[in-house]
Length: 444
Image 1 (tube, rainbow, N blue to C red):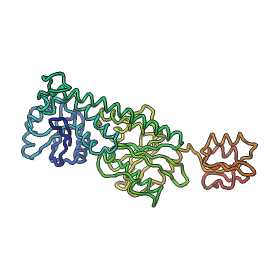
Image 2: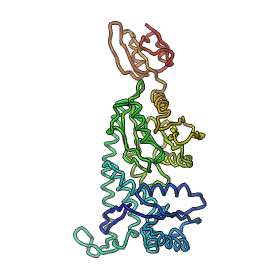
Image 3: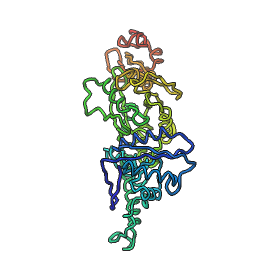
Image 4: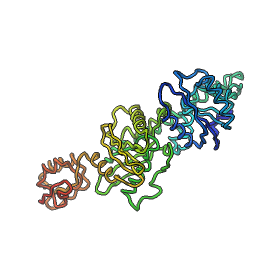
């Protein structure tokens, strides 16, 4: 849980007892409040109560009305709460007024999410992105973070001994934001070079995306297990926990399916409703990994009743990140928890799997291979040396894995278009799979 001292340093404490507060603006916010409780638990907070007020618009000074504020104050006292978490963003003035009225710590949904991200970021880029989002959030709310910011400051580097600490903090934060943006720009350039290198290598990229806690990391580990078997080590697997935002920094793993096309599988941060705009902006360089993928696996928690809402949230965030999305497969996960098969109206290919038991993961790998190869099939050709045009056509339209030069011609092995198998069937060798695998055998 984020807390700041008088030097604007982030402090963290372990135990909190919180009451959740939401404003229902002519809508049902039950799913959003349930999600807020999950976020609080992910941050190590014990939720001891909830309060929801139906209003046409939030109160400017305190977000909730005077009557509800008095009721909330009594509730905090009787339940010994030390924290109140609001489901919507609060202004600095609202936060200050609420703390004075309730005499407990008051935070909002954005601070809660930023706190979780701050605790989960491990890479240099991830930590910088979280810090940037934190500072962007704090800048317009400095007046709401405590009386210490109204003290006078002075000394070297200030405009004079009369400069207020609030102004010092604002200038310091603005400078730090500029420094972080500059460093993130350098890291983004490095990431772009790495993407270009992957493109040159010809290895396609498959990205896992979807709502947080839908089972993306568990699915990545299951795919690793299915394709690597006994070779899977703890170094290769990724952290997977039944909580929101268990994974933050993107994870890359090379997948080598038996008889299929190798690809890079990426697991990145999950989405959540009311994801702070500053956080999306800060993480855009990381989320570009999803935008530039050859295929998206949109993972959905099938056992969750509000899954349609989660799908909508994930799609909305993706639309914000990139205009034209790659091809997509809807992967309905956690079928071990339910036998219900929801009607998929996304228009994308859909598959029902269980990362926990491995159910239908083999079929998922086959579908991934079909998309990545565009219908390519394994084959081998023996092309005479005087048929150079045939060799060139096969190389241009397929994925040649090896070329051997024999006395009678060039042997090309790899994955080729079905139309080329028909067009150049005279050059197919005995190595080419039989009709049982969707190919015709022709011996030359």
